[in-house]
Each structure stands twice: as C-alpha cells, then as structure tokens.
Image (tube, rainbow, N blue to C red):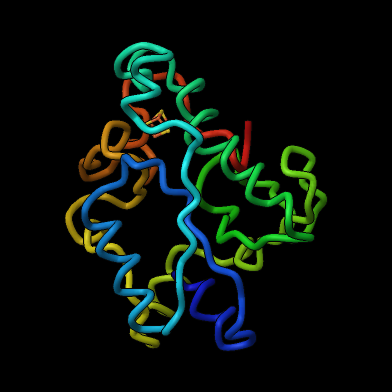
Length: 185
Ligand code: SF4
C-alpha cells in the first residue's frame, strides 16, 4: 500500500492489479474497494484459469492442504505470469527485512519466471519505515494488520501470529513452505 501511494503520486495512470486467488479474506476485498474509492482507480483482478470448484474437481478437494506448492502455482504464479505478458516491467513492495529468503532481493532485475523487469523500490525500507509512512500519509491498509496478521495471503493458508513469532510464521503454517513462488521459488 505504501508503494501504491508513492507510485500513484508520480504516475496516476499506472496499471494497478491484484492477484485474486478467489480465496482472499473479506478484509482484503474490502481494502481493494477502499483503494479504488480513495485513489479513483480501477484495480485489475487477476484470477486463476480455474475457479476453486473447478480446481477441486480437477486436482482434488483442498489442494492447499495436500499440495500447497501446486495450488500456489495454479492460483498465483501462473495467473501472474500470464497477466504480465503484456507489460515490460512490474513493481512490487518486497523488502529485504521481511524474511531470510528476501535478504538479497535486487531493487531492479530481470525476472526470469515472468520474463519482464521486476522493480522493488522498497527493498531497503524497514518495517518501521513502512508503518511511519502509513501513519504520516494516512495510507489505507488491511485491517487484519491490527488483528494479529502481519502477513496476509489466502484464508486457508494464513493464521494469526502469536507474540514473539516471526511476521511470516502465519503463512502456510505446518508446511515446509515460506514463499508462494511469485517472488522466491
Ligand atoms: S496461499 Fe494457499 S490457498 Fe492460496 S494459492 Fe497458495 S496454497 Fe492455494
């Protein structure tokens, strides 16, 4: 949301999108609506090729439980790759302090998986930098952040974190999985 706020100040005609797995929290969908109203933009919803019901029929019920890597490939990685075919570059709010898997992310690099340039302008920002900017600029954020969810993905794969847990401990809890594959495989 910080990146979106900054980027729209520079270029109000930016193409803004969200990878909508059809499994996001109601609070996340509410945030998308708030963003559209606040900034006067349309957020493109990038959906998977299959609905959840179709995926259940094709790959078995609750693929996120049996094979979350495959589920993320179908519902996140492939839709993003297909969507980005029409673009030269995309921006993401990845930060190096978010996790051990992100500690070396470049600010600008060729993204082999999507075949476009990937830019991470906030790579060197800290979590404190982000929250200071949010407060000082009245940036809309997901209300779940105030309810124990520092990192938010799909409903089935995100839980509250306890005091002292890592911010991403609530993602794919119980699995040996820390990334969906969009940013780090
Ligand atoms: S986060 Fe979970 S439900 Fe969402 S796409 Fe990945 S495995 Fe599927």
